[in-house]
Image 1 (cartoon, rainbow, N blue to C red):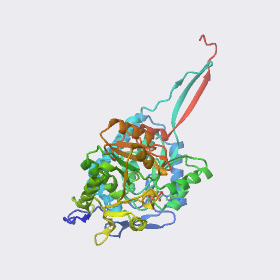
Image 2: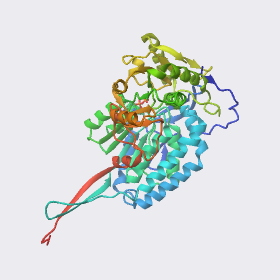
Image 3: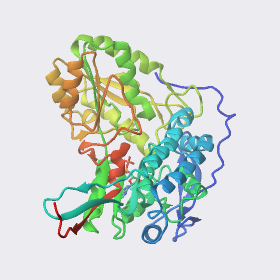
Image 4: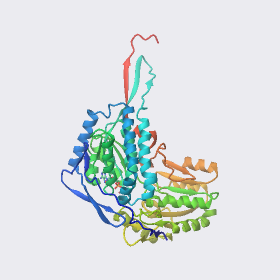
Length: 499
Ligand code: ADP
């Protein structure tokens, strides 16, 4: 079974928490109500610290600061080159604080410290640099009109943006949203998830140090139904960029429709299929499928939670993936041997365990895992079910934990049909050496990203987002920049044109 790693982690110095207040108009301030809430360490279930609990009044203040910074401030008016220069400085400051930032996400979200240091935090500074390079390359077009008219388009920042982000990638999510909107010249309010407020407040501090003008980035920590709802229904917010559950995405869209019809983009849940064909290298396929469900403890919307294996290699695959899952090390995120930390909080932990119980009751067979591990904290063993069926809850619902459902298929047509039999359409994996199979299946799956012979192959240049009930709009790549720009047409008559 997944084991609790036990090398000494006590030597690691936990970060001192420096920032616990709201960041509005360039200052750290208490919530107007004076309320605070606990943020919990999922390694132990103990309180790390208390953080200001922003509500409607605080959202109003933050939106006012962002509105003033947009309507009268320097940020949207300075050259793209200058914005890019400041964003580069911001990126450098992140790199100077990598260890502390990775440690904050480890204690707040249970994320592996080593992976945070090597991947998550460096990717944040890289995202900033990528969009910094784009900030002075935002162009309109000259139009060929059918009459004597001179016309061109301007690409203008969309205005005040509300970013509502989840807890599974507190740092990456912050910069996936903030970086392109900064480059576009927007001003913004970030509402981090209540489970993971700490690194976002540190990023607010670094924004000020980098020279980002006051009011451009505001961070309001607090709960979704209060702070998040106030932001999505605010009359003076021009756009909401949301990442989270499909249910809350629906509420955000309703709030936008019922208030000022602000522009909305939604990156929502998933139940992504991984399809493994008979010609695949079984060892490689088992590695890939396992990583697809245990990476970040399965707390990732593109987790490969439905694994379809062709009948010719099914038995061999089951044996391999079980061996690998049993050797997977679950343990303290600061332990360099750990491959999987604790689930983010008690709610998630209990929800995942109840899905596992449900899977057993529905008649799926438990191949590995199936229970919590460790004496304290929210650790769960990598769990694999075989004999799963499309109509089972464990196959239909997004579990957001390390729980894989394994199913067998015969033909390529059957694989495509089963893979598409989900309300979600975020990602899919294909493992095959047959180019024609890879191409056919890639075109047939209704999902925003298809990974062929790889999984989680993210890149800042690669757009990312959903089909169907996984949402709409794209993060990452130059596509994300589009989300934060309006197109304005300017038309003038041409008199006495010889043409
Ligand atoms: P998860 O299910 O992964 O916890 P949620 O969709 O609940 O994801 O949360 C994602 C983000 O949405 C968080 O920042 C959360 O505070 C926020 N949120 C939750 N409820 C609402 C709401 N009613 N309106 C706006 N934002 C919300």
